[in-house]
Image (cartoon, rainbow, N blue to C red):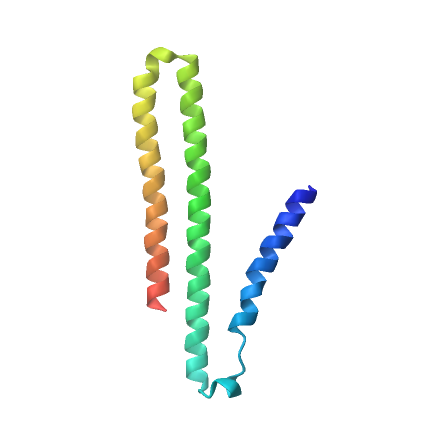
Length: 114
């Protein structure tokens, strides 16, 4: 449990570290509020795209790991069905990967629209 909280606090510190880099007074920038709002919009779009890719990659990795573990367990229990299990496993892995690529495209579109 201690490692979990250490990891969570480290991740929070890394995420909040970038906030200081984006902090800038409007008077110091020398631009009006429209430029500031545009910068804020781009910053939030970048954060949203990064979170979308992170969640999709994590979910895809967990799903692929579970599929592979189940396939290996199924082949270990019934070696005669290994060809059928392998075919279905590859199909499942391809579908999981297509969902991750779809999330990548959506994140790219979100970032490019900003």
